[in-house]
Length: 540
Image (cartoon, rainbow, N blue to C red; front, side, top):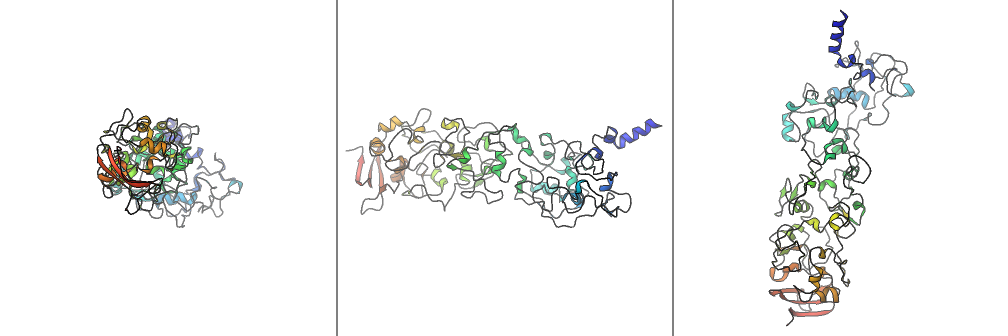
């Protein structure tokens, strides 16, 4: 008769029958004097008593032996949360009777005196297991997980798709017990299933199959309890802190490109701002303004298409309309550089335009070819590989000065640069700058220096930038001139004077350049105290 009895016991308690390897007996939840953890009683031998009792239990299933917390909790909140949250309910409240730190571990209903714990410990010590009453840094619980919620948040899987080990309570609410089984620590942390490669996380959260391998582990960036950032449950206090866990050049299995040096340079995009501040505000830019970490891929792209390394990131198109997923790199840039009315221009331009998008759109008078190939069909200074039909990225000019594009070994991208304003190479704008390959290294990346100084396209290039030490920026606005402010007659070839260097002739309204024909024109202005009155080129 013993063999059948053993079979019955094995069927009912398979883990216990297999050496109790997945039993509460050998887990930290065994708070008796024989428990394996450092949190245990001094003499109490019963194991289940800390939560359950067969008699005089609270009117709560399953035969609950503890008081239920009455404290009001600060619940999780996040802009990305679609669920409606209230105070913890059901089994979550039972878990919190130990894990919020307000009720002594040994205070059970079946004993007149609390069970004495070793070392004088009464509640859980500070740390991951003591959640406190502020649950704003913990994964939300006690919310209804149904098809209506999935309709509001398509990144969640339908309840019918959840594996059997993921259980909702009878009211179809997600509780602590959806992820944790208090009696089984076989997977560690009392998880209901193995979380290798985030299997537990993606049981509920739909995930795009990104090809950046480290991004496939949710716990590389997120933590479900006591998250330093609170919202988004990030492992760092800020988005930057979280990214730098892998992107700061420290040894480890998940190390990515080391961007930490760029974030300490003179100009940098990321400001390490607190999570939750209003997005897309000047001087408040963080990694996820440009990168969508869950959808990043390791492939490359060709201009003007967006790099897969940015992921499925929203943006603003050249018409000024928001797009859910950017197709072109410039759409990501326009998300922030669309209309910065409060931004002070770096150069005092004759035509002032704070909307970078309007400087680049294909309807602009003149522009560098970011959104579309340029308007000028005659640009003899272009270096081999470039033609007037070519397009360029914003990051061909604005990027790390030590990145691969700059001839260095660091990561590319506009993370930071010591060449202001966040340029891949030096670009002097000060008057009386001695011409050199280094002074205008940015311009000479695309425009052949010898061709420029040979006056191939403009008769007085060498005289201006070499002999008179006038910077390129004195005449040319490198972004472009909006069609609402300029004209092809006066502002083609990126002409938009720096009025700190170029002044109007007395009695005239403004310094003026006028197109007269093929590679010819006139200037009426004062530069370096020399008056140009309808001065023409080629010189007559």
